[in-house]
Image (cartoon, rainbow, N blue to C red; front, side, top):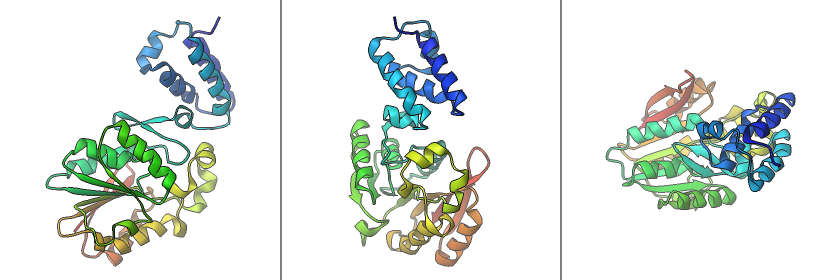
Length: 277
């Protein structure tokens, strides 16, 4: 006989704890396999696991013990109330990016066009299109593998967006947008030693790291940005919590015409900025 959900979760959690891995990863996998909310998993804890779920959960445990993210094992990650397809071709969406999306949605009045630069799995552009149906949303990434995931997510949420393969703004020469939003790679190579092992081993380095202390993509972005905005346009960026001073200096030098507003995340760290033209 198969184990109950409670027995299976307790055993997997114990193995993960002994390996120094967050046991919540096992809970995440089991909730998705059983199509349970956290409360439902508790309510069904004494139920015997069906064979397909038991086998899938058993197969997931060695992968979790190798630090593989639970989101990649399941192939889904939650963002802004929806599940998005993810793979090692794209970053796993973080809560801080939900805060960035909420800020853009607050300022959507009068906006008709939005550009998502470096879209990855598409969570930013797709969520904003779902929140603001009037927006004509273009989503771009340098990675064709990431764009394939973004396309699948647009289909999952049944939203119509335009996808382009592009190195920053290269695919939209001559086009200007009301809103531009981007979560660029911003981690310095010097931070490798303090990063989570699973992030380093499984998430795409192309979407994580940037040269010049993590600022290289911001520098290129700011140099090209004036060609794609007009009076009244706004651009939103996520960044590392230690980068505000360097970015403030960059904006003052390269984009002196822009009004700059930094905002903290819910943890009290400066993590996002709005540039108004």
